[in-house]
Length: 412
Ligand code: FES
Ligand code: FES
Image (cartoon, rainbow, N blue to C red; front, side):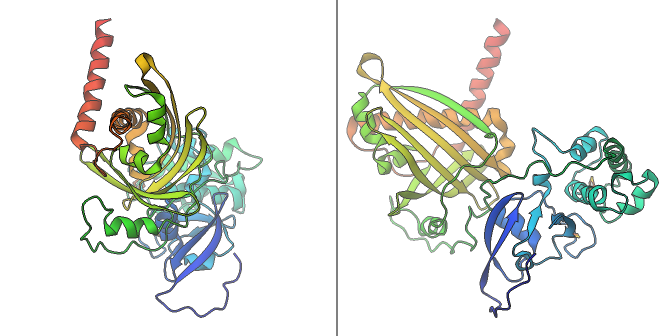
């Protein structure tokens, strides 16, 4: 950490804090009194850092700051200017877990799992920086690990896991395995200030004021793709009745294109070629409203190809980034084959839907998109702005497809 600058800042002002989190250089704009744990969770979407007591007792919020364990609820974010922070997300990835994470799973070192991030980061610190390193005696572990409390009292599995890893690495514990430059998105989609309250009163067909104000807050964000494997990849094809040139005219007009996307509203076209928008995704009872930004990265009229990168976040902690490649090609009977290859990066609540369901829902949305593009190509007018997908219909459609697939497999 570099010493805090001696500037006078009023209590209500926001302050920019630059730090490195899990290998990514980030700047968060935070209130003076925000602690590091809230900055990580709310501004960077790193909700693996848990909060229990928020006054330094339970250890749930333990992270590494400049290589050493620290209680993120006792550090102000502004104290972390210039710091290197590693959270549990940086320790290992789902595909390549850190040895400590594997050992916790093998020994069932968790019950509800709420203390697990703190336990992992604290045991990492003990085995890396403790006076004995990985030579720590198993009998010392209950005292050495007592800085993190497990409300489920699952201590036996936890201590067995730590003892196992200590014995397996006599020459030193491997470092965090998931620290690389990537885009970190907060609950607010990269913005730091909360959106203005909805004043309401917009006309039909116009974006609501809350959409405009919330989305304008992400106007500083450049859409980027994170490193690592996407959460889901989707390849879909659709047959349209209209000829390829008419379909391309729709794809090449971002306003029309946005109108054809189920649940999407184009809020503002920025001068530098970015588009601010809002998308409502409804999955059964779960309705997510994403405010975000998109940029057309590639546009090839000769080949009728378009590549769009988009990212957004909803107020409930879900974030998504997407790399979308669209291609229109002449199809059967003078029509068009529309092809989309999409890589989706999901975090927060939406990631809980899993790859298969995310893929199924994306296919459903694409079906609605292709039919809207066909209509726009035929009539010159895209369907009604913001005509979102029926949440029930999407989920029911997905379930019906699943059941049909199962039945046909059983029959074979
Ligand atoms: S939340 Fe930080 S110590 Fe309890
Ligand atoms: S496993 Fe529940 S708090 Fe530790």
